[in-house]
Amino acid sequence: MIQMQQQDLVDITAQIEYDHLSKPNKIHQRSDTVLPGQFSAWLQQQVQVKLGLRGLGIEQYSWYQKHVHLLSMTWQDEERFCFRRELDRAWFPSLKFRQKQRNIGLLSV
Image (cartoon, rainbow, N blue to C red; front, top):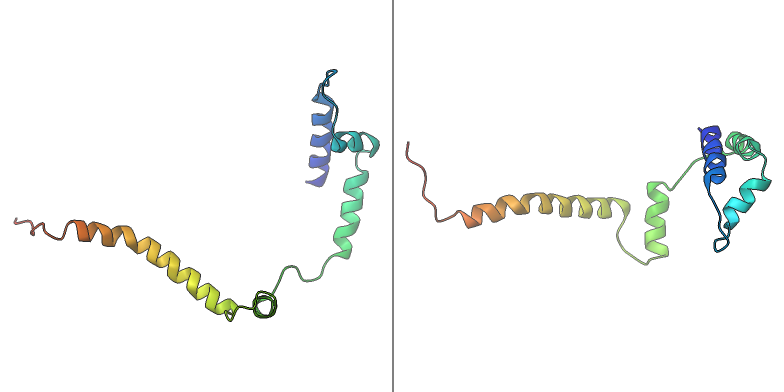
């Protein structure tokens, strides 16, 4: 996938036409100096080194909220709050419709 992206960058750079008013930006200038495949080879080497944990865990996020943002909410509290808010948003149209139709009698068959 990285090789395909590198080739796409080379193809796009070749298609760009510059006139006397526009100048190539730094990315296009830099892509001309980097050998095709050199960047992708470097990325492949970095993948082998970076095999550790990624992102934050629940404990780290709760610590961050408590000590950095000075919030008393933990991950579980925030998750519960977000789920409750989304549940309320999902129920609102149904409740609004029932309220609107409250004076209409039952249909007789």
